[in-house]
Image (tube, rainbow, N blue to C red; front, top):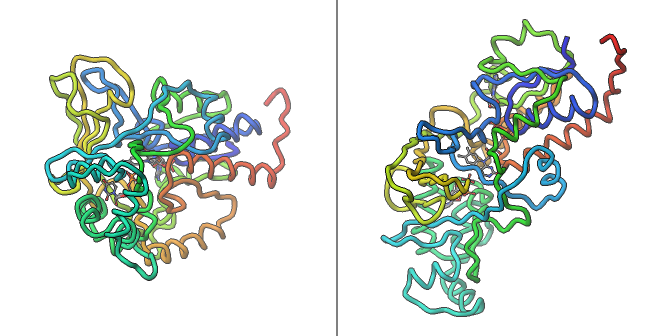
Length: 374
Ligand code: FAD
Ligand code: UDP
């Protein structure tokens, strides 16, 4: 008999398992239908021996010292600040849009933040109520920059126009009047020194944690003896799609190794105007690995395939609310993570959500008292 069955060995499931086992001494079985731990953050050496991320580039960033300290128990870090260029009108330009982007694109030499703000304000479109992912960009940078950097990329990535997505999606990417060309502005930005998978292995390495991979919850839910459940898969799937499918956006990844040392100047190049793929990642920039060849991933968004992104728009939020009511009513089951709570969360937010869930559980459920013989 396990105290807990944890479905999913990604950030949500692994943090829950680690806390339950280590802090409470609970006995935990973790299952995942994939053949590996780490969920979407899984990284592994490819055939050439280059460390790649099987499900696209993952860069750790957070403003929470608590979350950074927690993960630091399981990994050392490689300092890394992420930089992204976008291929626009035949040039590689910084995204988030900053002073350099504007100067290069329009052949200008704006030299102060005030000049850049004035440039943007002269182009920004008045929007009465900022509601959608189109509004938020148009109101800040105007139509030309919106169309060049955001409209095409968003249509590719999400399969809908930015005007049909919540503002929260494109609001993830700021616009800057200075020359800061980092993708994230968070206090802590780093890559796990030995990779994400190694960090997960250390997290899950505990005598009270058993892991079974390649196992789907639907096939074993009636055969495993457990008291309580942590579910981190898609919430609509848990309830057999009772109210219909919650839309999740998927991606197809094309991984290639090239016989050249470097392919592009930064880890990620975005393609908002051309190509069927959204972006190209070159991993050695992220990992610092030295190798005479280089490995890249091309991302092709798609409606079908593994669920990767909840799609933030009002009708989906309404459908999720109905599933959330079912989830709240479920006895002895906790729903955690990006798929189970239908939230477009970064890794650190999932860790924070799992730690908070653990604290609630630990307050509500007395810790087990075991005899030495057990
Ligand atoms: P997941 O990692 O999806 O884990 C859920 C696990 O549950 C999966 O392994 C799945 O196989 C398993 N599972 C589901 N259903 C079942 C079942 N029925 N039975 C058994 N197992 C099941 N975040 C960042 O902070 N920085 C980034 O740079 C970043 N880049 C990203 C790039 C891409 C392409 C994507 C898709 C996401 C990115 N993220 C990034 C987000 C990050 O991947 C997530 O926040 C995080 O991985 C979510 O963890 P999770 O445990 O909730 O879900
Ligand atoms: N986006 C865009 N052009 C870009 C980068 C981002 O239009 O060059 C939009 C797009 O809709 C994307 C969203 O901004 O889905 C959020 O980007 P982010 O990089 O945060 O997405 P992630 O890959 O982390 O999910």
